[in-house]
Structures are given as structure tokens and as C-alpha cells.
Image (cartoon, rainbow over all chains, first blue to last red; front, top):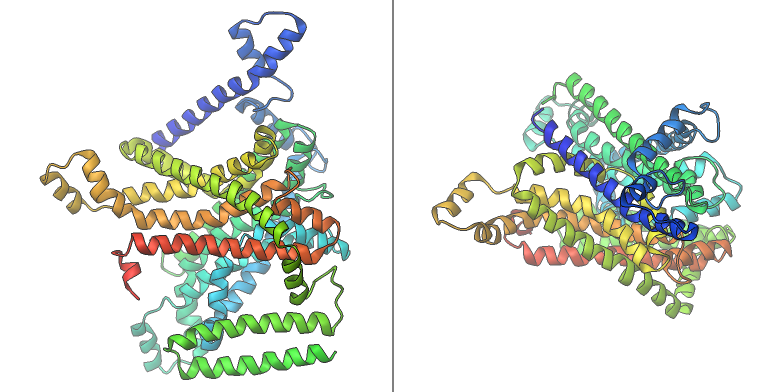
Amino acid sequence: MKSILPILSVLAAIVVLWYGGAVWLNSQWTYDQAARAGVEVSFSEMVVDTLRQDRPVLPAPHQVAVGLWQGVAGQAITSKRSLVFHAWVTFSATMAGFGLGTFAGILLAIGIVHSRAMDMSVMPWAIASQTIPILAIAPMVIVVLASLGIKGMVPKAIIAAYLSFFPVLVGMVKGLRAPDAMQLDLLRTYSASQAQGFWKLRLPASMPYLFASLKVGIAAALVGTIVAELPAGATQGLGARLLSGSYYGQTIQIWSALFGAAILAALLVLAVGVIERITLKAKGMAR
Amino acid sequence: MNEALVAILFWGVAWGTNGVLANRFPKSRLVRAIVPALFGVTLLVLWQGLVRGLEVSPVILPAPSDIATAIGANLPLLWGDFAQTILKGALAGYLIGCGAAVLVAIAVDRSPFLQRGLLPVGNFVAALPIVGIAPILVMWFGFDWQSKAAVVVVMVFFPVLVNMVAGLAATDALSRDLMATWSASYPQALLKLRLPAALPFLFNGLKIATTLALIGAIVAEFFGSPTRGMGFRISTAVGQLDLPLVWAEITVAALAGSGFYGLIAMIEKAATFWHPSQRGH
């Protein structure tokens, strides 16, 4: 609780800087309009005008807040202009991909932990593949799959799955290896089978590692879905909202979509955190 | 069909070899290099064999040999795109963003108040889909590499900042007291104790930032770019269904990403040779 005040003051500083930036960046347009109309504007008039333009270079925080509020509460949820609708499209693809990627990652991690050949073959590539800008290829995957007739949620989910797959794989391998030699030896003295060792020792021990990488993975899946919505043709989802905003110069729409995405990301990470706390408590590992 | 069968046979043999090698000589360094290499080659052979054998259309998935041909035929083009996207956009943005993050971290470090406020905010922002800011920055800075560099600056800033702030706080009280008994001034203590102690954390952030920089530079080009650059080439080549060229760009991007990461990892090895994580092997 000690850090509430510092966080609030940092946020306040950001808002102040943002207002300053909005006035500074939008003043050009105001002066141009005034010169065209042949009137002089005083400084205070200029400031007021910069904060309520329709298509500002940088919308002021309250404009974004209004845009966000209208997008969330001002429309029917099924409307194409509702941010809730677009966020739902993005969210469902993210979750489908995240579930698939997590499942595959855990499965492969189990294989890697139990087979040395698989470990030595696959792990270096899994680690190296994290240095590759996979996300940048996402739009291409979408276009190719669309030419095959696969459209809608599936291609987005594939990209989200791919992006969440590697963090989960690497974290889960680390987690399944977390039990030390003493614990493994103890299980051997109980003459536990490999399956028993897995269910009773390795899997519970991997939970903290799994959840740490799930948080990374779900954020990556969301970013992947949004980027996957960017190629022209997508009309639904937060990414498509960003793109149409940038085509038509609707800056407020871009910023509202951006903040919608940020709120969605925060909620998803928070949800994983809550599940983590419940699971760790059930396993007696809560700190 | 023949090629596909040969490829599957090759896969079986290679898998068996890997199994034997990995279980017989698990400690040998040579085997540690051979096994993943063989696995990579197997994937390529399987890819080539299946694409050729099952006569997959090159519009869907070109064979590795087609991609290699495309790379060979388009070398000047690929180099031009590489220079535009990686050398101008990503590298400039990376240097500015990381430099700014380190300076801000050092400035923030003197005030525990700011630190407590900035760390959670930075951590939060680092988890956001920042790449979405690309259309805005392209609108502000124009279509050339400056807007790509700006996207990269925003993307790398927060991960590096968070790591650097954590690193500067990583010295223990004993070392700081030692500095105090020597009556070291703030710059002296910063230069001789806290900056070196922060290096492992800093490099962690720098390594995360390499991939982000490439992603930012390439994705920003989808929102508008001059008629060169890797993102531009990928989106136009996809439009023309010239998939071998797309895959050639992807290969270049993958090599650039691993190379960039490897470069930072090498610098890390040279700069933090004293750290336990580097002394192990």
C-alpha cells in the first residue's frame, strides 16, 4: 500500500505531460485554421481549441476517455461501433489460441523432460526461435490461409497459439525439472513409477514456473491476435479498429482501441494471476 | 509420392541416430552440437520431401530449395530491405530507446519515491500491446525509417527501463556501506559499484529488446512505408502470391533476429565475465 502515492503521482505526471503534448502538437492546426479565417487567437483560446478538435494529432486524455466510454457503454453490444463487440472478437481468438498453444507447450515439455533425445534435438531450436521476430510474419500467415479459404477466428488463433507456445514450453521444461535430486530419490525409495513421479512431484512443482510463463504467453497471444487482425480485409477486432482508424485519420478511434486493448491485456494477466493464487494455495505453495 | 517416402525414411533414421547419440554420449560437446543440427536438417528434408512428394502448390508452401533460389536471385533487393528496416529503423530506434531507458533509470534511481511509482507502471506498460501505437507514430513521423525508429523506441524503452531500475537496486547493503566508508562520492559509487552490478539485469532487458525492435520495425511498415523495407516487401509479395520471396524475407528476418541477439549475448559475455551465470561453463 506504501506505493499507492508514488504510482498515482507518476500517473498524474503522465497525464500532465500528455495534456502538454496535446496542446503543443495540435496548436499548429488551430493557428492554421485561424490564419485561414483571418482571426487572431489568444493563447487561452488556442489551448481550449486544441483540446476539443475532431481529428487531433494527439487527442487529449478526456477525449480518449469519452471515446472509450462511448465505445463501451454508448452502443449496443452487438453494434459494429461497440468496443465491447470488437474486444470480444479479439478475446475469443486470443483464448482459443492461448489454450491450444498452452496445451501443445505442456505436452511437448513433458516429452522433452522424459526423452533425452527430444530434449537435445528440440530445446536449442525452441530457444533460438524466441529470437526470431515471428510476430512480423503474422499478417502473411493470415493472407495465405485466407487464400486457402480459412478465414475468421482460426488463423488468428493459430498465430496466438504459436506465440504462447514457446514461453509455455520453456517455462514448463524448467518447472518439470525443478524437483531436486533428493526429492526424486525419495520417490525412488518409495518405488514410485514414472507416472506417479510425474503426477505427484513434477507437475505440482512446475506450477509456479507454468504460471509465470502463462502470464507472458497470454500477453503474447493477445498481441499476436491484434497484429493478425491488421491485414486489410479484417473488419472485426481491436486490430481492425486500429487499422480503420489509421486509414480515415480518426485518431480518437485509434487511441480508444489502443486503450481497449491495454485494458483487455491487463484483465487477462490479472485473471491468470488470480488462478495462480488459487492453484498455489490449493497445492500449499502460496507465499 | 517417392520423395515423401524418402523424406519420412530419412526422418526415421535421423531420429534413431539422435536417440542413440543422445543416450550413449550425453556429455560429449560434439554430440550436443550434432543432435540439434541433425534435427534441423531433418525438418528441412521432411519439408522438402513432403512439399515435392505431395505436390503442394508453391502458393501455399514453397519448398526450401525454392526459397534458397529466391534468396540467391534477389540478393541486392534483400540487402536493400535489410538496410532500410534493420540498419536504419530497428538499430536507430534500439540505440535511442535503450540509451534513453538507461539514462531515465539512472535519474530515477536517486529518488526512491519515483522508483516505487515508476516500476509498477513500467511493468504494466511492458505487458501491453504497444505495437498498436505503430499507426499513430507512422502518422506523426511520416513513412520513412524515422517512424519505424520511433515505434522501436517506444517498444524497447519500458522493458529496458524496468530491468535497469531493478539492476541499479541490486547492490547489497554491505557493498554500499563499503563505498560509504571509502567516502566515495555518488558518481564514484555509481560508476564503480552500481553500474557494474546492474549490467546482468541490463543485458537481460537488452536481449528481450532485440526481438521487440525487429518486430516493431517490420510491423510499422505494414502501416505505410517507402517502396522498400522488409515489412513492405512481405505485404506486397504476399499480394502477388510470390511466396518464395516472402519466405526469403522471413529467412533474412530470422537470421537478423538471431544474429542481433547473438551479438548482444556476446557483448554480455565480454562485459559480465565476472557474473556467476557466465562462469559456469
